[in-house]
Image (cartoon, rainbow, N blue to C red; front, side, top):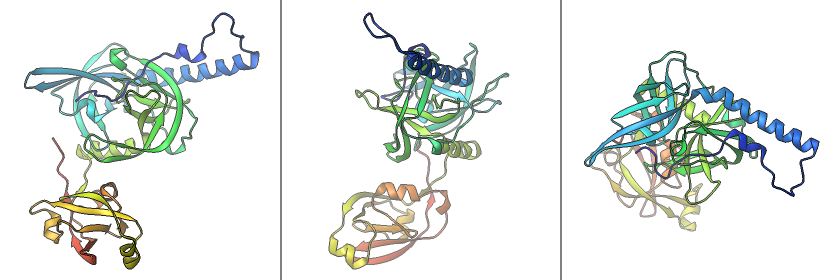
Length: 343
């Protein structure tokens, strides 16, 4: 899919200084200086990052014929690597990138990761301007941020706002929980997906990924530090490798007596509701109805905890799983395999 109720933005750098109507008091000199400084910061950030932002046109083959879509992205290496959202390019049969200078280039998919909604594509071209990543760990609520992208087909649109909150969680299209998401009120609309969120110095500190409709001012970006790690995996392997157990589970609350009896760290756990045949879980002896309370020494309170733990570190490596079975504690040894990417 290219852009669903995901992303976008509107506005322009000219809007940030505000406007007045007849009868409004004029800004004082100090207020005007502050507004001018704000405008200069936004315009300088746009001047720095704007040439790196691209429009991505996608073609998908469907039973009813080809379907077109579009999103945003940005060049992050001078040899043509572009970062965007997975939901923009996943499954596309053709990718076409439009640069700020008017060039339109064919693009190839390097790799995508639906679990973090990030993807890397590559174009061949000269004189490409690469954006620079910043440190998303340094972000603070209230900090000025600028979004640049192509909402609803309007290329090179700029909006500004502030960091509303940090450390949000957001569910990806695969069902996995994305952690550490940046919440901002910089206006986004469908078509902004994959565009950069930048700070006042022009460093990319997030990748715009979602809005909550019909709410206003609730927009989200994947932090740049997460994006840098995912990018390195996609360039190396074409995907992000994760460990796989082969279980389906649901969140359950634990009885206080059970918590005290087994000295558990959490008041909830993951109950196994399905075990795939010949999976690592089946081979380890996990059964439906087992309650998983720990994996590799880490407490498991729900399925998201297990997803966070199952990185490529455990692929092919034995790990200890602690389960409660009919109220009794059991320790099982499991060897996760590599997760197979979804088509």
